[in-house]
Image (cartoon, rainbow, N blue to C red; front, side, top):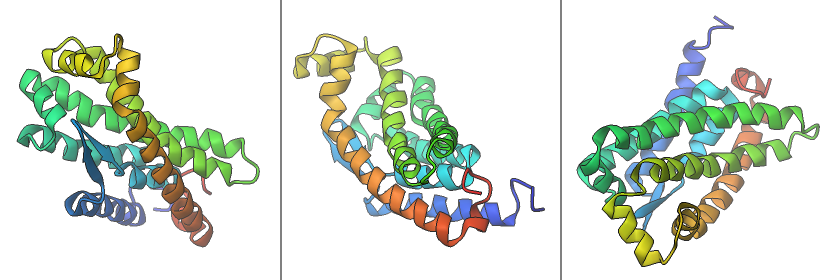
Length: 210
């Protein structure tokens, strides 16, 4: 059982991370509405899971984040993704769920590279934690530009923001929000992940910690 990726310990750890994510969402601590988007801090438990338990854990916690986001799209709780759902439910599912799964897995793989290149084992945690919100923005906004950019909804935003291309649109829409997400996730994710890795290293042997 020690080498079984889905043994009782792993399931318990994943259950805790998923519970934290859901509590953050239900209490409003995980997302703050900013215009048509949400400033999301749900990438924090994703980063912690991906760094301590590996890419699979990152993908699973990313999927939970994505399903919560997709629920908001279906119910109209999110203005932007709610508009996208009316245009294409399938592409909205890809945007909300699949992009978050890819993000979580990518954070896990990147952390392994960061840790291998960081003998002090400190900077790697910061880079891993920051990569979660940055990759979330990259995948999410990238898919919007790829699939929804020419829709009336986005073109109306483009006109309001006074921008002329997808890159300037992304910067104008999520620049400040993305910075705040990166700072919060970087600080919290680094402190929590590094502390847990040093206090209970055997419990997190699946990631790059062991």
